[in-house]
Image (cartoon, rainbow, N blue to C red; front, side, top):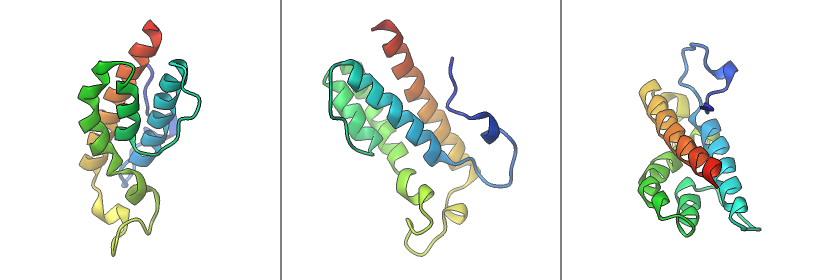
Length: 119
């Protein structure tokens, strides 16, 4: 099974793994799923909204929408240093937050991978 973790990101560091990068890979996969269903214009950055669009083709995606909403919390604030009012992502998000986001992103990624392989 393909992992969302990139080889260079598996090293142990003092900083949490960047959850925003995993969201980007996940969104590309969601777009691929929608393109495979015939969509031609797939825009947006919200994992939850993209899963909502996928649900129109497969009701099984509905269960993943709350996970997408959880992952959306990591997109702007972890990617852009000024995404948090008065804070720096490295001081707000902890290793366990990042680990949970990566675990949830992997769950969605695996689900979509299995759907794409059966189409």
